[in-house]
Every structure is written in C-alpha cells, then in structure tokens.
Image (cartoon, rainbow, N blue to C red; front, side, top):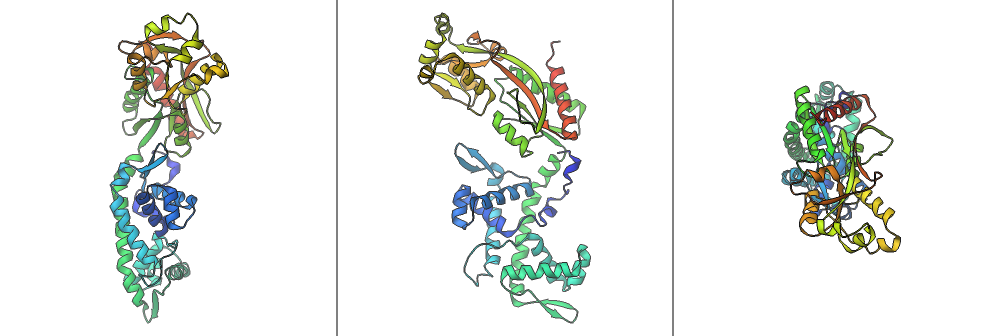
Length: 412
C-alpha cells in the first residue's frame, strides 16, 4: 500500500531480521497441520496466545494470510495451501536444529532467529567474526554475543578460535547444511510473495458491505469509484472486497483495509468518515401475503419466516431494531429468523419461497421482477458510511473515494 510511513523493505527476504525465529515456523506448521490454534498449542505445549502471535508474525512478514474462518473453524487460505509443503519442510529442518541435530530429546523449540542462523552461516563460510561484523555494519562484540546466544539455544559450541579467525566445531559443520537449507526454504517462501508485496505497495484496499446485486446502489457506487479511481490514479491500484460490517471494522483495525464502506451510521472513534447515502428500508414479501395484512404487522411477522443477514451486518441491526419496536417480547419469541449471508439468496427466498425480509427499498426496486414492498417508517434506513483511519494519508485517500462515489452516483 502506498503509505510512506510504513517504511518496509522492498525485499521480503530481508524482512525476517529479529522478527521470525525457528519456533515461529514450527508453530505455524503445527497450526496448518492440526487445523487450529488450540490444537497446535496443545501439541506444542505452548499457550494459544503464543501460537496465535506466531501465526500473525509469520503472516505479517511474508504478507500472506494463512488462515480464514469458516464458522467456528479456521481453515488454510488458498495461498497457505500452496505453501504448506515448503513450510512443513522448513519446520522439519528447524526442529532438527533445535533438538541438537537429534542428540537430545525433543522439547520446546528455542527462539532462534533466522537472522542469527544467517550470520552463523556467513561466519562459518568466511572464517572470521570480525570481517562478517564489518560486512553487516555491526560491532564485533555484538555479533560475538549473538553467536554465544545461538550456541546456548542449540546446546553445542559452534566455533573455536584459530590463528586467522575461527573454525567450525564438528557440531557446527553438521548444523551448517541444515541452517542453509532452512534459509533457502525461507527464501523460496518470501520470493513467492515478493510480487504480491510489490503489488501491495501500490494498492489501496477498500472493504465494502455486500451489494444486493448488480443494479443495487452499493454495486453502482463501487463501480463508479473503481472507474474514477483508475482514471485519476492509474499507478495506484484499488482492490475492493465485500464482507460484513463487523469484519470490516476488524479489517480497518488490523490494517487489512485502508477504508471501509459500512452499512451503519456510527463507527468507532478511532476512525473518521463521511456519510455517503441513506436509503429507506422496506418489508419485502409475496404480493398476496403483504396485501392481506391490513396493517397487522405482528401477525405476519410471527407466522412467516424472515430471511436476514448475520448479526455482523448493519442491515441485520436495523431489521432487529424494527422487530423490537414492532413486536412484544412474547411475539418476538414466535418469530422465525433464517440467517443467510448472501443478499441474492435472501431475495430468491422472498421472491420464490414465501419468505419475508427487510431490505433497502431502492435496491429492491431495481431487481428484475421485484417482490412486493411496504416502506417502513423513516427511522428505519440503510446508512452507507465511508470510514478510514485517523491519519493524513488515509484521510486524503478516503476523501477522494468519497467524492468519486458521490459524483458517480449523481443523476445525469
């Protein structure tokens, strides 16, 4: 993403210094193999918080999401599946190194950084701590202390003093090809992500609530934004993905999104934003069903199943507020709610299967053969709000997106 304050390296291979260690690699491999944080924690003898932190650290370093949530389960992403074999090989090598080349019982994997292993390899090949320290721009005492720490974690000496520098011990000579193999595996993992990283460096990511369909206000608004953005900023890509309001807020907090189009009017104080539009909501259903209610909403709502999005969406919150305002507590217990996180499926349930739903009136009107609708009171509406972090660079982009969306949806 084009954010100068991120200050990230253009090479992902260099991004592991003091961040990724062999314990991280082993914990990530266990998480992918076991299919969950808690199972990996139990297997490794680590707290779930440590495993979760390792996964986040690994994802951040290679700029690839590893897990996604499906209901109550975590499953590997497609990008993680493409890297599972490489991660497993790296974890096997790291475990062998951590267990003293197989000379001691397996235990907790020590926090040996890949940076320390890389410097061990350089010293072993060069034969001089002093010259490697000079090459890396480090002080010789600092590098010596780092090698001493590496020896302590691995459980054996690496170097002996020699006339012109240092020589490897027998254990170090056995560890050297493993360290090189591990670093090569990491190089392949990061190189596979380099193209993605360079693309991300010029990409702004917008999360948006799910459109009702191709003719909906949200879909038209996002299409207008995409066209205007490409024309105005051809060197800065715009990537748009859709999910629920709660997940959009979480994505803003984790910086997965640079801005988010929410279907709620309120948002956390840590962000700023602009109200893009407000659309009246309507009760949608079969024409025959709605024509017979004679204003008796309660009987209809209690006897007809209602299709709604999940509780993570702003649209669901408005539907819940309408039901709470309209029905008594005993009546609400008789309501049948069917959760479906797909607006096209909800519309199909309404149009062809006798369900009710509460949806934006203007978007429903554009659907081919729209269902019958009864507009709700003005208090019930879908508010679309564009939100972004409270920083100058994000604010500049957010305001530009807001203008493009407003200009693109004005009547011609």
